[in-house]
Image (cartoon, rainbow, N blue to C red; front, top):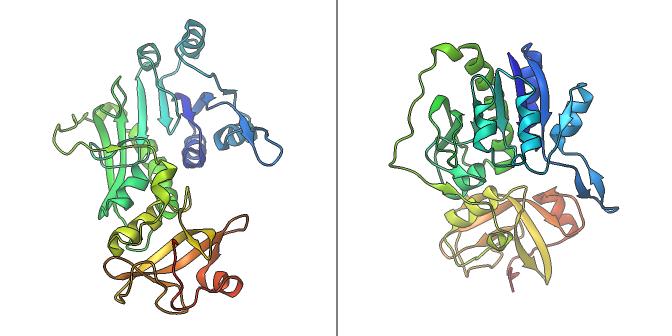
Amino acid sequence: MRIIFMGTPDFSVPVLDTLVEAGHEIAAVYCQPPRPAGRGKKDRPTPVHARAEALGLPVRHPKSLRTDDAQHDFAELDADIAVVVAYGLILPQAVLDAPRHGCLNIHASLLPRWRGAAPIHRAIMAGDAETGICIMQMEAGLDTGPVLLRETTRIGPHETTGALHDRLSLMGADLIVRALGDLDNLIPEKQPEVGVTYAAKIDKSEALIDWSRPSVEVDRLIRGLSPFPGAWTSVAGERVKLLGSTLSDQSGPAGTALDDGFTIACGDGAVRITRAQRAGKGAQDADTFLRGMAVSAGTRLGD
């Protein structure tokens, strides 16, 4: 099929690769414009932009699709379908209607649960046992369109958003190729009105760990915000991101290290930190981290 691909971050890259490998014609790749990044604050292309150029594909990065010129340019591509995955811009109705078979979205949740911007983070933070991928026919509402295909996967007890992100990205790539190959036979399934939840964009203010919360909630927060933005606490006055954890059956005063192995008491139970990161340094497994910054028994975190 002749496809317009629309995506921006790392999550979208395996989908683009798989569509190319499957033999589809990519008429153009749409992504967010380059933005200042790094120490020099020079404009840096997005992951999809970089990958598309490496593949020799034409790239477009309009700041908006609401102008007449942008919509005309989109329609002129004469596409069979558009595949959208974490693109980052709202598609006006004129864009949704331009391809012969409309626009399909790859969404990383089991719709109607976790419509919106941060479905992977929210699923882990909420303690969901499972999540998945939905291939959805796009319409004007926020992730409200009918679902053509869905696939479910369990969320591992120690899984972080980063690990689940990578698994779901590959699942989405596989599922969209299957959907395109059987498009004429797929029956759109209207989303139920019950069970709707919204995955609001993660606010950095959510990342500060409240050690008075139950250990189950603290563990979910740490894993749900790993690797970005990273749940954090203070250790001896220094801000430290905690990027991996497991539950522990130990207990003690909330926010106190219970041993020399990075087990921290919560309001109920405790968590053992498995991965952490000091400001200005790389993320490290707990054993390596503790060789450079001891967190001995009795240390108070968050003070």
